[in-house]
Length: 447
Image (cartoon, rainbow, N blue to C red; front, side, top):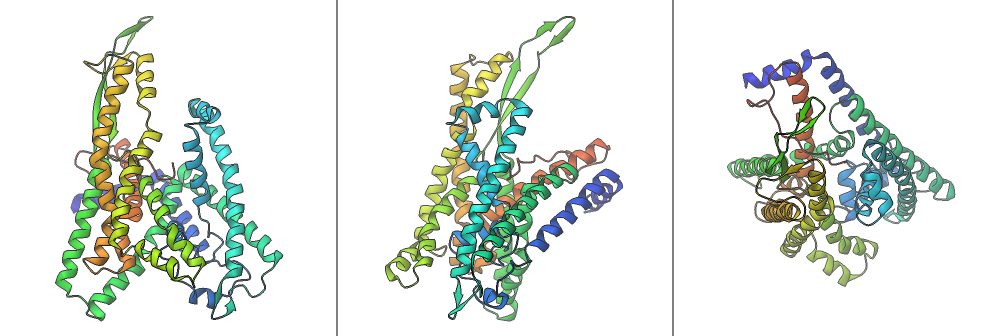
């Protein structure tokens, strides 16, 4: 405990790090303020009365990523999600579109150009989604009263403009955090929206246990212990990696000798990150989303009931889809042939393995083996909220922190941010958070 206190004191002794943390905190406060500034023309009272109906559909998942701004009909209702969506599209398109694949291999200049394309496409997607939000707001009614009393062309144009501008502003804020703050800006904006739900969810759980007396407090201690164990397991798997040794042959350039060293290729157990869960959850929310558009259809609501978070059928299908998407996304973002080719060009080789095809097959074989336990654990984490609701009796909002998208994003971003803070401390010859002085971070979600 004393070491942790001393480390925190060391953080604020470094002027540059102190300024970066303060800048990050101030920007995140601005992000949260924008999540409560409602669009003009919306009846606030009716909007509050309509909340809670989108918890188990795509709108609820979207609202999770934007920190409740979508349900608040705020100017940041789209959040940073248009940019994330565009980034994923370009990442997947890089496999089949030669032009994008070429830019991905052109180094810093190619990444800068691809990032510019991503921003422009994100603005177009934000405008399109803003138009969809305006139509949804116009059609919303509570007890026969419209949420938007004076719906018309002016409301649609204003909504599209404000929502697209909000996304552009959030993109800029994310870049400011990355450049002038600490951590990955896009990832932190998503994480702060998820964390914003934690106090309310914890209060509901506290109210259920201590005020209503629905569950004995010793049972609650066991539930919290399970939550801590799940968090520890996710951290362990997130940082888990298989290191493949790569040896580089010596070569002389002039009077200097290069190579002759041994480096490692870290193959992460959870290479795909949180994306398989997002893909699977998005597909499973389609039935409930369609049912929300047809409130009078009984058979649609019966089908949607099988795909609710409280259904064990949902948990089974969800787990299988997460495993499949883990292999799919890992194959998309990790190319063993490209790594083997780069190693061959740089004079590197894996001891005992011939360069070229054998190296590619060797890396692919190891990746397939370590992806299996990673995908199974990811599936277990994905369905943990369902078990927490059905078996432990945890409230739905608090159960989302037992696993799934929320937990993986928070842990991944926290590790990445701690790694950057750790690097600043070590550069100033201070001890880090760990005795070893190293925290293995993770690539940010927004990347």
